[in-house]
Amino acid sequence: MSEPVSRPSPPENALSAPYWEGLYRGELRYQVCMQCGTARHYPRLLCSACYDNRARWQVASGRGSVHSWTVAHYAYHPGFANELPYTLVTVDLEEGLRALGRWYGDGLAIGMPVVARIEQRDGSPELGFEPR
Amino acid sequence: MSLADRACVTGVGETAYVRGATRSAYELQFEAALAAVADAGLSPRDIDGVIPIGIVSAIAEDFIDNFGIPDLHFSAVIPHGGASPVMALQAAASMVASGICRHVLIAFGRNVSAASNKAGARIHAMPQFHYVTEFEHPLGNSAPAQIYAPMARRHMELYGTTVEHFGAVAVACREHAILNERAIMKKPMTLDDHRNSRMIADPFRLFDCSLESDGGAAVVVSAAEAGVDAPRPRVLIAGVATGHPDSPASITQRPDMTSLGLAKAAPRAFAMADVTPADIQVAEIYDCFTYAVIRQLEDMGFCNKGEGGPFVADGRLRLGGALPTNTHGGLLSQAHVWGVNHIVELVRQLRGEAGPAQVADAVLGLVTGYGDLGDGAIAIMRRG
Image (cartoon, rainbow over all chains, first blue to last red; front, side, top):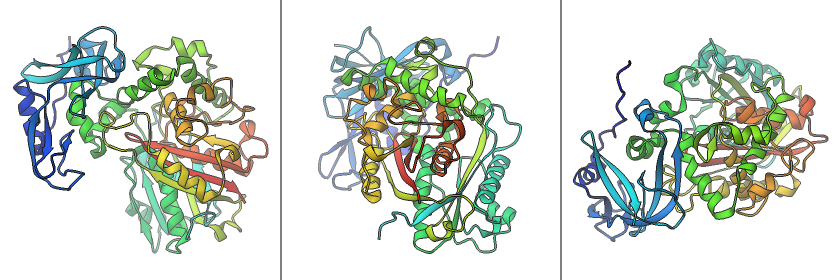
């Protein structure tokens, strides 16, 4: 028997540390430009509307609707081999942003209403969604 | 100043394509490069510009050293995955049209057989994938098949694209590979074989996915006037363009997940060449996945958005069909060398050197590149 392999971890990134800190606390956070108020995700340096680099972090409602999905039947990283098959869902958040998460539910359809469900796995937070 | 017809391809070269090469990417890249230079009727030291393609293989300095190049005028690295080779045609054409270079070498080599080199592992060392690596890989969205699958799923849900449409692309490529002595995949494939292949990342089955293979391929781009005296028939670059999708580093965040960078590039290339999709006689379309061919046909205007599935059905892409596509077998069935093989094949078609897969009287064709998370490139070429 070989040792079970851990899942990959996100690399250290000062820019997005507040996102991960939020997820650890059960919050889905995103950036809002302090100059013009434009929301952005995934975390990045500049607001593409006004080029300001200052952002505050806001907590998303977690509510959204299904944009697309895939079901993984092959593990490209050995850390996921014992989870197959698993479903990844892309969600249009109410805030006008997108998020990718694990899917907790049955059939999927574009536009289906969903809500975030954040699980802690081995001390690491994992974003997911379920029907609402 | 337009780049139209200012540059030509004078030389193409390939190694054998295999799975499990014993030689390094570096060696394969040089073998292909020497073959392309010889095909152009040149000496290696005539090369005055070089665009190395690939992740771990020879760099410009290695070409200067190994070729004894006395005065290299230009080098560049284009970091857009499978779009890079066709993007390199644009860069090379610009260099020879401006007089900075006379002969630019584009050379690729890869050996990905080691497990540590496979796509699901190697992309996470690439900066273009930093969002995927940080926000998606930890969830199990690790490799291109998984990352691209939601684009295909959304296309299926919105437009009714089917498994059979994907299968039509795979079957056409396999039929062409069977005619090609340089292709890896030789076993005949039916639509049922495609449908019955195992699911990898729904909706992508095994036969929707391109090969992991090893080899080298290279192209020499020369000034148009230098091609007149070249040993092979001249193939001019009539139109060439590159484009990036919105949110180029994250498909998840892309406003329209079903549109690629090629949608921005293609109108510019067709305008430069002063032709329309209806004029194209042969197409070599980057086929990392079957769906990518359907999507690119829409993005180039061969059909309307959402109609790519029915467009590829009924044998349109096969030899003898209305738009023979991937006449060498493509990445799906010849070999995956980032589509440099697509450029090589288009040049052979337009020279009339494509053997059993020759499209009769082909004088105008196109090649596309698709890289990373949807970067695109297109070159329209003509014999002349």
